[in-house]
Image (cartoon, rainbow, N blue to C red; front, side, top):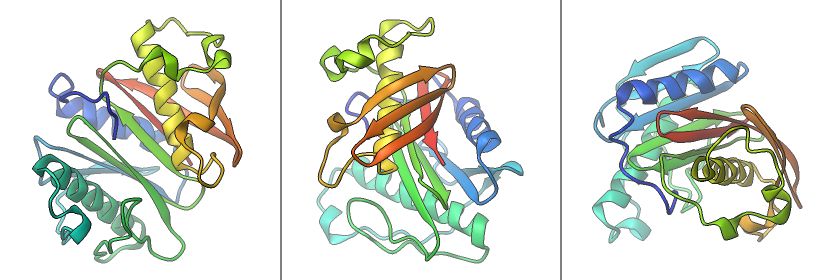
Length: 226
């Protein structure tokens, strides 16, 4: 979840649908993206190489003990993340899948599958499948300049303003971090965006090098690996 996230109202449901379409158009068979927006909590958009569809989720999502005293918004985000994960798994495997709590880092994925979940400003997105997966969404807000490395400050801005540019770099870093580009025990600050172009970036860390896709959608950024 972004520390700089703000409400998703400027986007609208169609912008969320557009984001799912962008991701779905780029992923190979065996990878599914699912998204939910707080304003439409009973509907999950799910997309893959076959296109995008709306689906109502019947996933049973309980609240684990470690989250029982959290603020209501945090609990809603948790349930939305597990719901999106369930819809994505069911789209891949068929049948009903009930998420089993795996702690703060995500659910216990079925054998052969993995995934990543992101929250920002009422938007929840899950990317599920096989491969080195990571997803991040940043609705809006400003990333502190101190977050950027010397090498990142030298990268081309691709015509973006300062606020949008920093947000892109933060988002692609976060997606790569979730995909395991950092070494064991390392933080987001231990990885670096080495190259960037329109809709793609290369991020490096102790865990290797990951290529990330990104897109500006509505007022925010979507970034993902596969």
